[in-house]
View: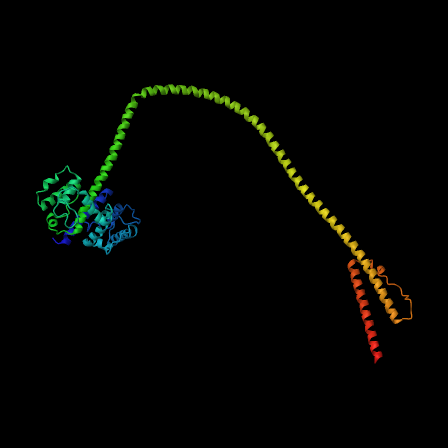
Amino acid sequence: MDLNKEWEKVQEMAFTSWVNSVLEKRGVDKIADVSTDLSDGVKLIYFLESVSGKKFPKKFDLEPKTRIMRVQNLHLAMLFIDEDLKIKVQGVAAEEFVDNNKKMILGFLWTLYRKYRISVINEGDKSSEEGLLAWCKKTTEGYNNVNITNFKASFRDGHGFLALAHKYDPSVFKYDEYEGHDNIARLNAAFDFAEKGLGIPKLLEAESLSKGNVDERSIVLYTSLFFHAFRAKEEREALEASQNSLNNKLASLEQSLEGEKHSQEELAKQKKDLEDSLNKIREQNENRNTRIADLQSKIDDALRGLDDEKLAKLDLESRLAKCEKDKAILELKLAEILDEKDRLEKKIDEDKKRAEAERLGLGLIRQHLAAQFSDIHKWQSFLEHPETVPYTGTPIDLDSELSSLSFEEQAKKLASKLESENTLIEKYLTGKEEAKAAAKK
């Protein structure tokens, strides 16, 4: 058989089984043909949700009647794969499913299978196909004539698959009994044991595999089913161990309950005695509570009186505190007023002293200027009338003229008179100089 045809057949059988195992857990009807039964997108979406563990984010048509509706469902599924699952599926569009393009659909499912069933395989530091090969080698250690180094040649004689089937359940057959069989018989036996014991469908033809006429991807796919069968068995055994542990605990609890049952009557009697004692205690407690209530009422009355006195005292203390505060404020203001009074009195004294000094100074200035003016007049009279000696003019008296004026006005008057006298002298001297110059000529 052509390798591509063989590969297509293996994929169709494997993926049909895989999709059905996923849909069955969800309670959805199985498919018969992957190339036609996924064409409306509904079961494909259910399958994608279950295998990825993610909720489909968009609303889709549960009963698409037309091609457009089916294409729309499948388009949403492709978007879910690309955007939410982050899986790149090259060259596969919604129309491939609607048109039942088996080759493209199988390629699509192979991409998903590698993502969720092969790439998750880990053994030591290896993963995916290399991890699967390492797992096969480790699992078949110790078996005669088994030397797994690659997928293409290591499984041709049947020893590898037979060892895997025997490792899964050694009680079903004896591995050594098949040493004398030929490769094809050994492969068929291994396939039979795998189908019946592990639930792995017969995907490969023994004769083609023994001759090396099987696509390596088919061997990888078939071998991966062994890995997941072993993992499922381990999970079942772990679950069974957990259930056994719970059953043992339940049995122990039942024994404890049975032992307790025998003491129920004694416990009932003790319960009745305790209830009687409790009733007496309750009665005594009620009487005590009544007395306590009466006493509490009296205490409350006394406390209310104390509270009134306390409130009055607090009010009085509050008023007293306010008075003290007001007193402190007034004393502070009084101190400020007294300070201001002292400052003003000092300023008044200083102003008086300054005024007296100004008055005395102006008096002296008036006297000096009056004497100076009188001397100037004497000198001027002597120059004009030298024959008139002594000078008989009336002395100049500035006090009578200026003493009644303010300081500023006196100063201005004195300055003005002094300027006038200076002007007259300069004029007089200038005239004398001109007359002398004219006489010389």
